[in-house]
Amino acid sequence: MNWVFGLFFVLTSSLIFAQPPAAPDGWKTSVGLGVMTGPVYQGSQSYQTSILPNIQVNYGQRFFASVQEGVGYRFQWKSGFNLSPFVKYDFGRDRDGANPFSIDSEPVPELSLLDEVSGSAEIGLKAEFSGRRMRYYSELRKAVSSHEGTVFELGLSLKGKALAFSKMMLWSVGPELQYTDRKFNQAYFGISPEESILSGLPFHEIESGSTAFSFKGSLIIPVSEQYSVFAFAKYTELGESATDSPLISRYGSERQSQIGLFLNFTF
Image (cartoon, rainbow, N blue to C red; front, side):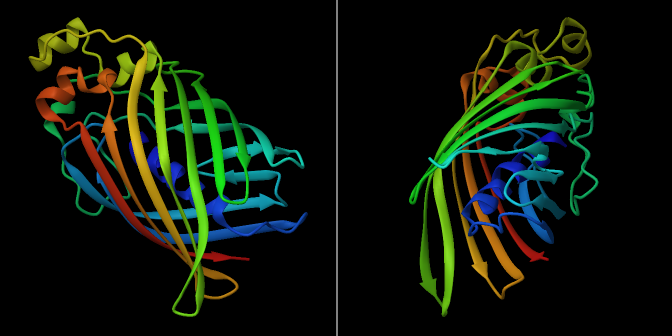
C-alpha cells in the first residue's frame, strides 16, 4: 500500500508547486477525488485501479498537512529556496498487496509467503529551489520503526503555462532519482532465509543503492476559481537494488507506469 501513497505524494506535489502563489496568510483547504492506475507494489507486474481522495490543508505558504505530504512547516527565503521538515506515514506492504481504495485488485500470490512490511511514521527534510521555469528538489526521510530504512529522492522539473480552450493550463515535466539504504532495500526487496524456505525464492541480501529512475509529467486545467482538473503520467525504470531481487526478477517488472486524473475543489 505504501507504493500507492508514495506515488500519489510525488504526483500531487507536482500540482501543489505548479499552482499560483497562495495568499500570504490564512487557511486554505483543498478536497478532491480521482482515479489512478499503477502497480500493486513497487516492482509488481500486476496493476490495479484505485479511487483516491485528496485532502490538503495549508496555512499561507508555510504550514501544510495531507495524507500524501504529511504534516510539516516550510521555511522560505526570497531567493526561492525552501526548507521543510515534516512527519508522514509509510503504510508498508501487506502480504496480499491489499489496498482499500482499489476497485479491481486481486491478491498477489508472490507476497503471501513473504514477511509483511509494517507501516511506520517517517521523519524527513525537503529542500527546494523554484525559479520561473525550473524547480529543483531533494528529500530525505527515515522510518522511525518497522524497517527503519532511509529514502533519498532527487529531482528537477521544467514548468510552464499554455493556453488551450480559453483556459491557462499549467504543466510540469521532469526526471527523479530514488536512492534507498540497506534496511529499506532488505525489507522490500531482500529474501531472508526463512522467506526463502517458505517461498522457494533464493536467499538474497541487498546493500544500499538506486531503487528507481522516473520521468513524470502533470497538467493542471483550472475549471473555475475553485475547481481544477489534475492529470498526470509517470514512467519508471527500477534500479539494480530492486531488479536484482528474486521477487522482481521472477514475478515483477523493471518497467513501471502510472496514470491518473483528479478533480479538486479549493476553499
